[in-house]
View 1: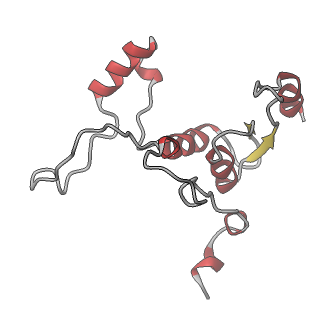
View 2: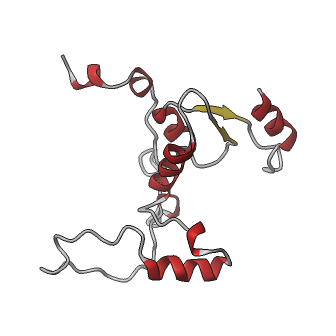
Length: 143
């Protein structure tokens, strides 16, 4: 028996997400990978080497809430878009009952996370001018 045999069937059937870097993209700055090109240097010390960061840092949440003009309880801090997307789908979608609307071309992890968790992914491409197709989206929700 292999480890693959233990994985859920829908996970085994997934097509792995491919980043631009993996697909042979060129360049030194990868904004699509949430890399900050002008980030300050970070140094590990004996005090920080074995410490997890605060998962929901109050100062960050409050500062971002002020910036975005929302309430602090409306802000989720994550270790990147992938984690945030997965947390939201896990928290609010029931596998086999709910669906995620995916409007490509956009970030592929919306559909990857939904499929991994067992939530239906309904795809409605954007219009030729990249705007959301609201009519098709409405049909997608009532399907």
